[in-house]
Image (cartoon, helix red, strand yellow):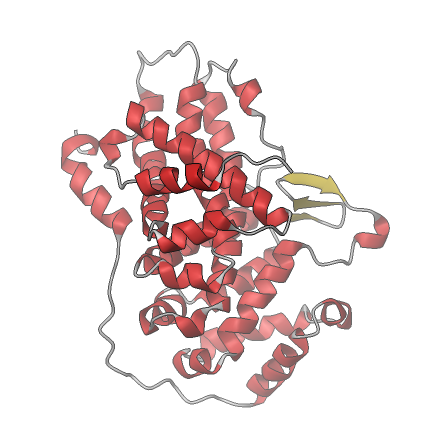
Length: 352
C-alpha cells in the first residue's frame, strides 16, 4: 500500500505543529499546518486500516502533540460558531469561491477524524494529559447537539459533497449547509473518541471521571442516543462510514458501529468499579437508565454478549436504591479553552 508520508516527514510535520490564536485562522501559516494535519490524518488511517505499525500515533505520543491537536480543534469550533456567522452576514462579502472558507470549517472534521484513529490506544489517552478534560467537554457538546437535533428531526439526510465540487461553489449559503452536514459527521466521530476515553478510564485522572459522571452526566446523554438513534432512519437507512446507506432486510436488526459504541461507553461508565462509586444513582438518573432495559433484547445481547452484565445490573438497580456517592474533596482542574477564547475575543470582535 502506498504511503502518504514517510516516517521522517511525519515526524517533521508533527514536530512543527503549534498552538495558534483565533486571529491566525485563515493565514498562510494556518493553511500550511492544515495541510500537514490532512496528510497526517490520511497516513494514520492507512496504517490503521492495513494493520501496519501506527507510527503517526507513536509520534504524536512521543512528541507530546496531542494537546496541540485538541487546541486546534476547539479553536476551529469557536471560529465556526462565533466568527463564521458574522462573516455570512457581511453585505459586501461576495467571494468568487468559498473553497477556502470551507477548508477552515473542514479543519475541525479532519482533526476529530485523526483523534478517532489515535485515541483508540491507551497510551494516547495518557499522553493527552490535561487536555482530556477539554476533549471530554468537546464530546459532551457534540453528543448533546446530536441528541437534540435527533429529537427535533434536524439530522441532515444528504451526504457531503466533495472538495472538487466545492471548488466551484460561490454561495455562502452552500457552505453553511455543508457546515451543518459536517457537524453531524463530527458529532458521530466525537462518540468514537468518548468511547475510547471510557475504555481507558482507569489510567486517567479522577478529574476526568468526575467530569464525565458528575459535571456532564454522560450516562444520561448516552441514554438519549439509544432512544433516538440519530444514525438510523427507521429500518431503511443507516449512517455508516460517512454515508447514508440502504439497509438490506436481513441486516435491519444488526447493530451499527455507532450503536455498539454507545453501548460500550454505557457499559464502561456504569459497571467499572470506580464509576459505580462516583456516579449518583438518584431518582432521575435511575429512571433514565432503566429505560435501557427495553432496548437490551436477546438479539442485541447476541451481538454484544458483554451487555448481559449490563442487563443484570439494571435488573438489580430496579429493585434497589444504591447509596449516594461520598462527597469527597477533589481539586479538579478546569480547562475551559472554549470559554477562554470567547472571553478574550468578545470585546475585541464580537462585542462590536
